[in-house]
Length: 566
Image (cartoon, rainbow, N blue to C red; front, side, top):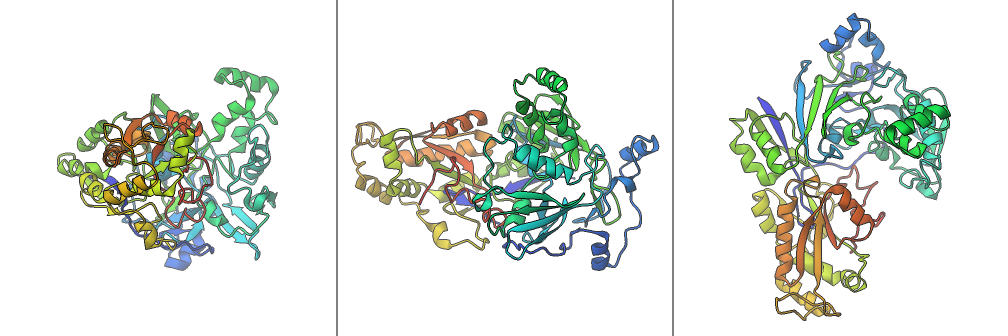
């Protein structure tokens, strides 16, 4: 029976559904049961030895045909050893998936992206090795020595070495055409650009201007392939420093770019199918490689023959041969495919607890199981009010904290919970998850109660007591107090439009002329960057102790698109 995994998530400023994470440990520790960093670590923990390796039949055939080296030669000296959650798997099959954003596969992205380091899947607090086999921090916290897993290979068989680090640091991060402004976080920690030193074929160092104790946590966030460690052997043919002039000009003409760095950017973002224009068979360290785009929005991936993880029986992972991700333009299309049993995995942005009864009703006929899955975003919506509104009158109104409190008090979080989420959520204001070490109940409860009477009193008190004949409040200049809630629809979450409808009704009830406007993601970003939005909706992530300490973008004004304040 197939499993349909549904992400039970949360709504902030509106409400939240939380499932437990602990605080993160920054000290390097032996891997917890579930993942082992070396043969020696596995043998010490289990008393067992892995003496032989196996591979998928589709790869074994290539080995027999001498089109691929034996599996022993394809694995690194110490492959990562994964202890199966339930049992040793079987090779084969195509995983059927779906996405609703033509420009990205955001729902499925984190499912297959490898990080430099990783957070343990078992205790969700230990930082453990991954692509980086080991790391060491200096006593003052300013210097980090990191070692790449020896014998690691890109998906095309090319070796992974510190040349891939040097190229990223010197020829990408410090190239004025590619990076005209040196990136801030985390590479300018302490107010100065990070320094990188290559020690040997597999070892390198990062040196920061000030202590940076959370840097290992950053490494568990950063994707290898487009940062720190990149396929330099493939990228050099698109870089002006390495490519022949005539070859570069020919490629620029072929791909229709005017500048070499525009061509380079096409290939340098190796987040797999996150970038739907990615070239096929691009060298990667992920478990699957993009092999074709059979139709617009559809991507096919096949197993990486040089993938560097095995199970406890010595089987090279992954078990699944192929993944096929198709585009759906509407929630209804996704739901139809779900109930028809045509999908094997549905990502967090493409389902919603709002449709839970539909999934459950057809569970038996569709030959699938619906599981409530732990998650920390998507249905967890956050409303952002533009504190730098282009209209000076509206800007002054919005910057008054009493106005924002009134908007919050006007929202009936319990009703949203019951209407959209069947009472499965926990109402809350926007804050970190309850199991966070940084959680304080007072922030979760701040102005989160439904009190339209108090909301009206606050709005009257700040000079918005006058109304027009339709009951909408008037600004000091006589115009209506209007708020357009702009969002990117299903890119934010499957129930975004329904949620926005309810917010519009709550705000109209206290005299705010509110309406929603759904646009595609590219237009949403353009309007946001042009400061043309009144208010917007996004899913509130970065609320666990894995991300909040290093990327508190919902709570600290560290970049443009976070427009809230106390």
